[in-house]
Figure (cartoon, rainbow, N blue to C red):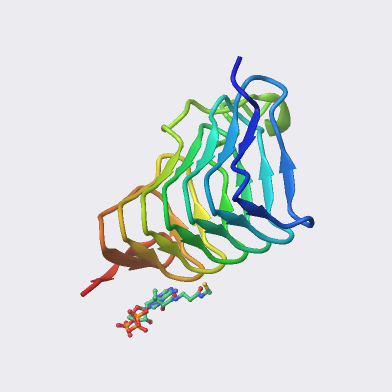
Length: 165
Ligand SMILES: CC(C)(COP(=O)(O)OP(=O)(O)OC[C@H]1O[C@@H](n2cnc3c(N)ncnc32)[C@H](O)[C@@H]1OP(=O)(O)O)[C@@H](O)C(=O)NCCC(=O)NCCS
């Protein structure tokens, strides 16, 4: 059986962070020397995906990561305060039931954030997003899809505003 919580002994987890492992078989993994800072929340909920954080990555205060359809974060990733990564969508196919009772939409593949990405403060990253190696996402952006490597994106929805030199 998958270990529901696999945290490297060298990872730094604030005593004020909250991590809620799955009771249904998905996993949360946090790699060597990664930091999860105070008041960040990582919760296995809303789907069968895992949350995987590589090495030397930083999840800053007040970030919320719900596993949903899966979150795969690479190495040396910086996620600024207040960012919300929830790769799941409630279904809303009928008006005759509260959304709460309609389950979830089909997965769009979860969220992938590759090595060396920097996400600014208060971003929202939606299911199906792929943020490629070394990209930057500006503060307050909503990411909905593919962001090419080493590019700079910002806004709602996020659009390209430049390239890294
Ligand atoms: C994305 C960012 C790195 C871009 O910096 P930059 O390359 O110096 O970009 P500029 O300031 O030259 O802005 C370029 C254009 O993008 C726009 N822009 C920049 N950041 C933006 C943002 N977050 N949302 C929307 N538009 C943004 C600017 O208004 C400008 O538009 P214009 O050309 O029409 O005038 C920076 O703006 C940012 O958002 N940093 C995040 C800071 C943060 O969250 N820190 C947390 C601590 S880790």
